[in-house]
Length: 259
Figure 1 (cartoon, rainbow, N blue to C red):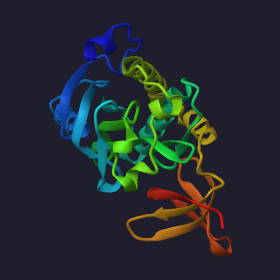
Figure 2 (cartoon, rainbow, N blue to C red):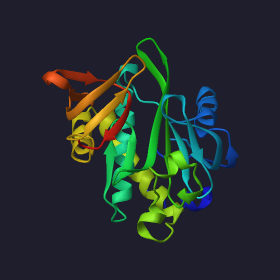
Figure 3 (cartoon, rainbow, N blue to C red):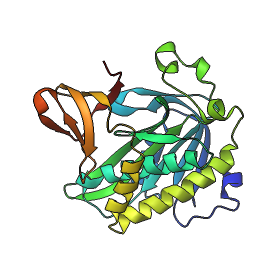
């Protein structure tokens, strides 16, 4: 697959160095080892399957054949406190890529892409930093492109979908990767060039969470209320009972049915 993706690839950074594996425990883990060994910015690890894919808050990400499971090594000059910008840029890039197939993909705060209310993609960014300096970031992206979600465990299956299911035909994964790499590079360069607010504005327009009743699970508490917006850093603003406003920087977001 790597040679096919490289042929005609129109990027300068993302995907110029591809490392293809049939099976790995986690593309993020492989990418971390390579980044520690000095792998160049834009290096991408692609796997047909992950046996222990990494998900949000330490959860396992189910990664069978026919999906797109990648990790991208990035080396931006930025504060570790701003690493979340890479997650926003990546989520936006995936949503735009899926929308290029005529599917109404939206972003679900903070790091998912959904179609309707079904998850099709997750993004996980991990960093290595020294106090105020970001050494590198690993942006892991998992997309259920042609995955048969009927094979997922029931607790995951009911909330999952794939491009194949939505379009009722398989998608060429090589072409999907080329589109994704180009879009991710565009969004990443906007972040690098101090144009994050433009990225954030585009992300806001695709955000499905605002206006929803939500449950946010954080390491310290659970928050219920209505998501009324996001601030200039991408934090979610939730209006809780009594009109109290809660700013949420990170957490698991669940869209709730209205009473």
